[in-house]
Length: 181
Image (cartoon, rainbow, N blue to C red; front, side, top):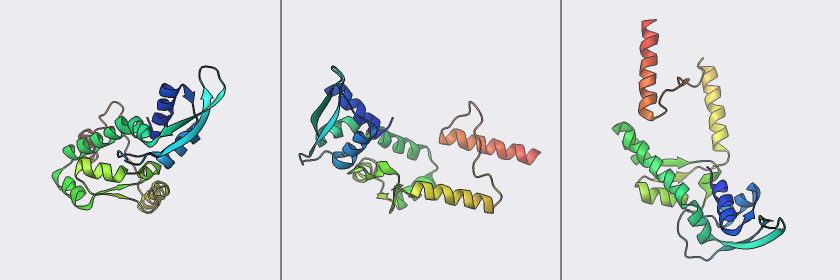
């Protein structure tokens, strides 16, 4: 699921109107919000009526977009909480002290940093160039891996747990196999 997909599904379900990804992205950027807003922002959008196939316009409000995204955003909050509950105490302490850095296009959703901070109690910051930092970081990791003769990632065994604890257990098992060889 994605924020844009949730917006597209909401418009389809509530207005019988098909909109594209670009329109959903425009809605997200212009009136999308992760926190309830007192402002009555609204936006006119165009799409294809699913009943007769003809073009049609509607007006959607920021309050509607907030409602459409709420379940998705609550899932992010729950994932952060679960991750913090399962990570080592020292790491959780570092996260509480230094905070969470948001990157990528989703971090630009109005109020996302505020909502995450309020619901988790962890400081949340938005990267300086959130649209570029994921690609730049991946490039730095590749460069670092090449300069240190590493492959850059560990393969996960088929059927192995992808939870933090399962991945930690797999890494420990991998180290034991290397020591025995």
